Length: 473
Image (tube, rainbow, N blue to C red; front, side):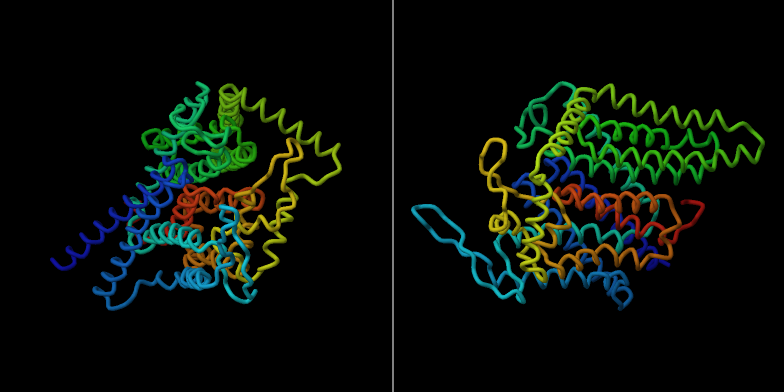
């Protein structure tokens, strides 16, 4: 008996350690300019390295107790393959540095298409380190968490942090702050929000947080029917969803505003259908309940419009101008041409790609839009504005498939338990929506979004499979 108690205590300690570590990872990345400041990435990777160490300790302890390896460990083989390709690419640099008239220039090396290559080995190592540290830190959830209630505690904390960011960003936007943190830090993007440099990155991060909050709300609805819901965290979660949804148009993110509206409409229907069925079964009028739900959604839209009216009007006029310009001009839109040029880059090294972090360097040889059509200034692209195309260009077909399997395998492993909870439904739904969005934008170019995505995905894959006492769930 003492031996069993000792084991249970250790399990609880490991759960809390992993939860705190993952919480700090996501929150830290979010507040440090979304993790996109150059100085922030090594800090996030360093913190994530503690998660890699913790992962090794969890595996070691499991083996010491059971003489077997944890079952989820075999899900890491795509990550091992991904790392192997990246490490081999370091021995075949795609460019070499030379000095010409006092300036350093990069000269392209000849590397076989059948060999992995890295355009900039230092950038490849940094990108690989950051990804490994984030992925394995979130993977620890599969190894350590044995309690749904503790996993929900992490989710509550993430929603609370996102709500704080929403309030902070809204106030910052309403007072017309000239830069991040009320002007304390100049933003390289004029369309910033809260601590995020780019408004669409904030929108992607917020969409995942809305998914988490909605999953928790519907979990509470299933457990507490009728008025008992008032005495749960559900009202606070609804307030958080409203706050987060309002920041979408306030930030100026058109695409994320539309996605959030779609998710809220689906959630509204999900909320009302069982209520309407119950009232219909009891022969009660259903019009009043339906009107309350519709008015609630309209209230959120109206508040969002009132607060964000200047930004909404600005983005509306910008959209009209873009549509009018697209109708009158003959040349291809620069975004479409950017995709075409990126695809040309990807096709040249289709199997292994140009190396992690290679896009800003390698794309210069494929960029057909070297100057702006408006002011004739040189035009450089750090991102492809399509995560999928950029992944093909940097990782190739092989690396992109392996990254995809890093997400698919945990879901496949827990496929029988995925339909059990709304926590899983909304997490998977919004994660899928974000992956579709990544075809035409680069949400995963933001470190905080990457952290939130892997937490959301591992939560979705794990939640339904945790065996707990239903009375305490």
